[in-house]
Amino acid sequence: MPLVNSKELFEKAYKGGYAIGAFNCNNMEIVQAITEAAKECNSPVILQVSAGARKYAKPVYLKKMVEAAVEDTGLPIVLHLDHGADFEICKDCIDGGFTSVMIDASSKPFEENIAITRKVVEYAHAHKPYVTVEAELGTLAGIEDDVKVEHGSESYTKPEQVEEFVRRTGVDSLAIAIGTSHGAYKFKPEQCTRDPKTGVLCPPPLRFDILEEVSKRLPGFPIVLHGSSSVNQEYVKIINDNGGALVDAVGVPEDQLRQASTMAVCKINIDSDLRLAMTAGIREHMKAHPDHFDPRQYVGDGRKYVKDIVKHKIVDVLGSNDKI
Ligand SMILES: [Zn+2]
Image 1 (cartoon, helix red, strand yellow):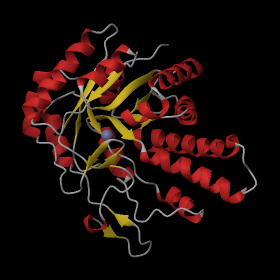
Image 2 (cartoon, rainbow, N blue to C red; image 1 turned 90 degrees about the vertical axis):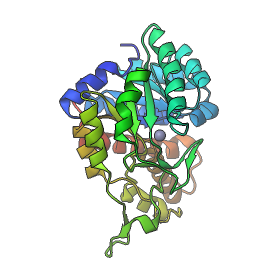
Image 3 (cartoon, rainbow, N blue to C red; image 1 turned 180 degrees about the vertical axis):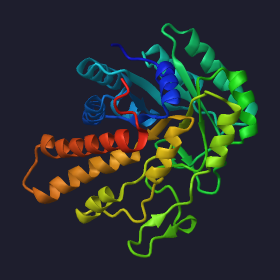
Image 4 (tube, rainbow, N blue to C red; image 1 turned 30 degrees about the horizontal axis):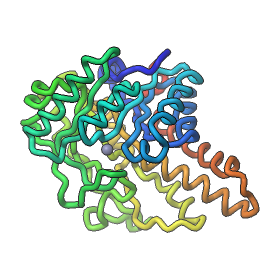
């Protein structure tokens, strides 16, 4: 099976009440960990590439690695551009064989966001085969590669804008801001309460009222959540027990993402959790074996931890297992 776009996957996910994981990748071990996990769970999967990943690994390497994963697993895999900043990067990816792109003009005024998104949609939909397009309304706080929004400058999606935006752009899916956030420090301590027993921060709940209002206005239309790592504390603990210093790293609780998956949300972006798992595996290995210097040994342990967490997400958060 060749790479696929997200259209049919989202239709099935919407009807089936689950979401598809969109995991960021930038090296071979991460691609292998994600796709082997998906294979063992019999789950469709989206591999997404940011502008930072393109700079780090070069687009051609990423494309060929993802094609290798398709050949190796036989899974329906989407190769998606995450946070395309302008028409040019989207065009470059579409021309280069990506099956899905995100144009993120969410920081621009509404009319400008519509105009840029419309231009990308026209190009992507005219392409053979059809390339799906994701856009965004509202802005998330946090840091993700080149995308940076200060806490306090984020804004929730306005439900009253979504119908006009989707109608005028022709976009295939829409990322909305309901309180998720990019990075491993999603919320400032003062936005959270602190568990008195463990000292772990407990973030403010997602705005499910906005999600419900959006999905009422766009029946059957796939919604996307960015910034949806949960910063699983067992990995933070492994990192910190083995020489790391991640203080007050906090994510979106998994039970809230589970709930969103059963609603109109068809794609959930997870990046930081994979980074944390990779780092935990490497740090643990390095501390236990200070004499090792073969990267296959410690990166291999990182890969194993990434695979573990992807399987956990597919089964316990997204619900996309056994959906092929
Ligand atoms: Zn994002």
